[in-house]
Image: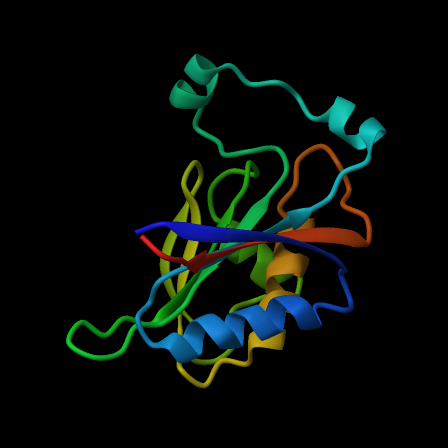
Length: 165
């Protein structure tokens, strides 16, 4: 299946275009598509992010220096699947525990599937989860789970929608 990609720039406190895309993908009901969310870094911030060779990334026990979040829509029908979120980060093990200690624990009904030092966080989301609350949590968690660069207020989303084949 081919996917159409849309890049959206937004202020961390004004995520309406991302929320609208989440609702659109969820309403399809087929579980297809996804959205990646991360901070947009200026040139100075980009220079401070360490380069990682493919070999170093392969053998490293940690994820990326700048956290990246992903959301996938639910699927209904013959093979139902809950919506999920993920956060790839480089801060090491027990990220959810550290987030909880900072008041960013998982909301009621969100179920941890994975909290791995290298592969990040994966969480199942209930059908009742508010898309705006999901985006706020992803931005807050990604801000905390960074190793080098403090994200600013400008964020970006890459929206992947199923297209024609």
